[in-house]
Image (cartoon, rainbow, N blue to C red; front, side, top):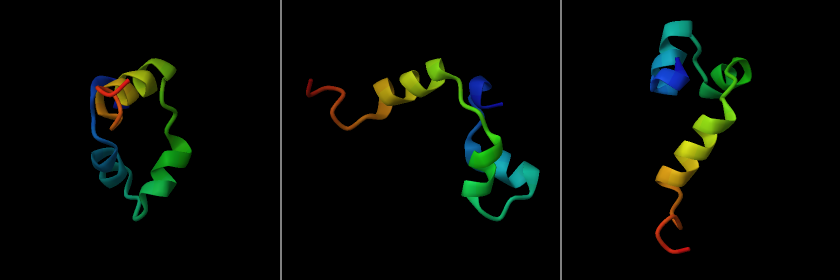
Length: 48
C-alpha cells in the first residue's frame, strides 16, 4: 500500500493500530520508496 502512495496513517487506521509505531513494525518500505521520500522531503535537498 505504501508503494502505491497510501499514507501510513491511513494504513494504521485500516489495521486498527492505536500507535503508528505498531504499524511501522509490520510495514516494510522498499528502498526505492525510502530514497524517493528522502529526495523529496529532506530539508537539505535544495542546499546540497
